[in-house]
Image 1 (tube, one colour):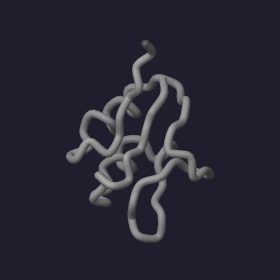
Image 2 (cartoon, one colour):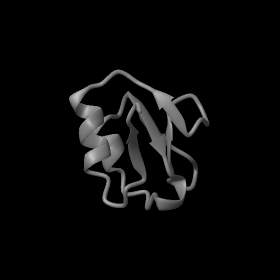
Image 3 (cartoon, helix red, strand yellow):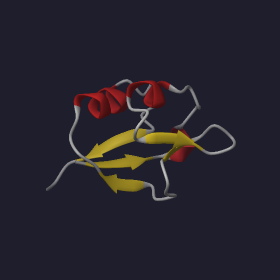
Image 4 (tube, helix red, strand yellow):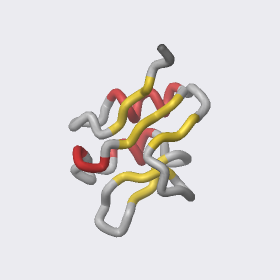
Length: 68
């Protein structure tokens, strides 16, 4: 599944990292990013922890991009 990060919506709450620490890291200012890349979209395996991270983001800074 493809995940998109919307940095302008991130409030640096840390929930994404709690649910999917293998996927999400933070910039120095606390804004979410993917590990080892500055890309804002990434194709990742569909896991329950990743879906939880996206679903529980309080500001919608993470989105699952559905195939059309």
